Image (cartoon, rainbow, N blue to C red):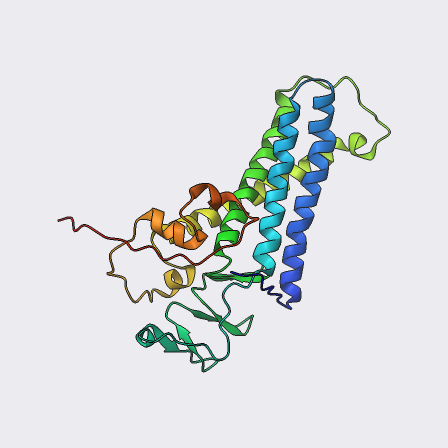
Length: 265
């Protein structure tokens, strides 16, 4: 993937991404202030739960930033077509440039992207071959962080012992119920949306089909044998080491794994 930074000038995308950052900041400040730290100080929860919460939040933010600024696989104006692979390339009828098959022209970004899945306004970027793995990590850690926050919000009122020390001079303490209701509303909305998105992304990788191919029903090799799920995920994440699939701090390298299929009658 390299270190190429990709920045899309799109006010609509900026607003969507700003909303995501606001929800992240809201929960990263409110949940520890009202729930985690007070219950930790009174001995209701161990400190490791706070460390896990901030760890998930950091992984989520890193995946968001990197998915937003990483080049998704933009094709150069004069691509070099490897000898012997010309039959795997085609001409784009919008920008009149050669591109590998399964690439798509993004009308919002104005260029072709290798194995483009879709353009996501929430990261203000296309989801393509080089940042799809980061988008998957973003979905995973967002869902994990949301579940974690909702769980602690529920336990705060229905499971943990009541807090003995409450500073009513603090704004968040005086308006705790309204603040927590807003956090719960945003959390449930986020959880429902991200669960559906994450599910469709996982199914697309398992079936080796992009979202654009699903919507257009134009997957040319619909009768091709299906790859094992381990290979399709390894190709997306750029490594066979499954533990690295969850690390957003590394660099992705293209991976092509030979595979064999057995015919079952």
